Image (cartoon, rainbow, N blue to C red; front, side):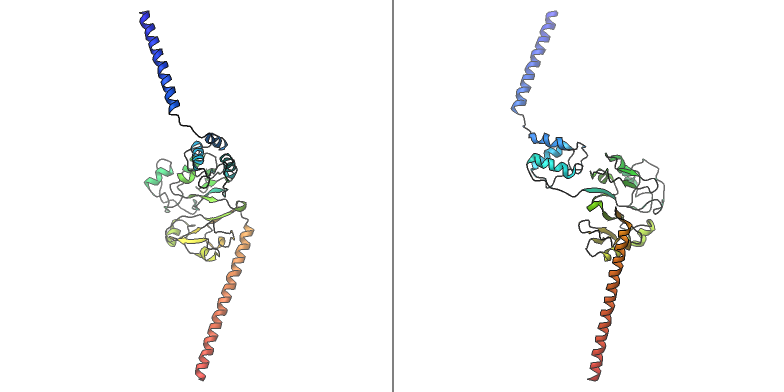
Length: 315
């Protein structure tokens, strides 16, 4: 009996050693050599695995960068330009600097402006609620206020304001990882250029209903009145589907559009009220000059017509 056990143990041990040897030889034979630069790139990345770069994680991003051999289409928003310079140095290529971005809330419909029309009695999740109905207010485009965006933020850069029912971005902590943007079923969160000296302007409304209908649903909804559009001298504002939008690439931060909005939902960040006041005064002076010029041209045209009429009578 003991011999049977001994032979069994020896046989199994021999089979195990043989299998291990075969596996080792096969692994060596068919081994895929991975570029050592992938490890080096991964080491300098922030290791947040947030997916803001468009890849499923930092390792995947490092591999994509090495395989691409260029940084034209790949960028780590968390690490920013500083990290990408290190990545470029590892790859021996030129770094591509990009303007930093930040998440912004494209909705001004707080509790005081957007009254509830019904009560939602279900799972506290924006994603679930959005599949069931348009929301507990008349505006089908506004924030649902259940904080899905806050839950997915790995950097504690957001919180829900109890007074307004809207998410608030903590600028110093936001890395523009895009997680909150992807999570919001209403698409009210958007990545926006931080701007020079962290200054920016954007329209905080996405309601595409026509003016009167939009205002019935939310007191600060954009009505598409086009006053801001007419005040912009740089073609940075467009009106589509009764909704104004600002192009951050064209916007010069002249601020002349801000106070043309009668509900003040053109939002400014880190811009003093005094500068907005001066910009408004400048816009009013320009409008007054244009009005006077138009009147003078009209009077001149009328005078010309009268002279032609007198000449015809004399003839």
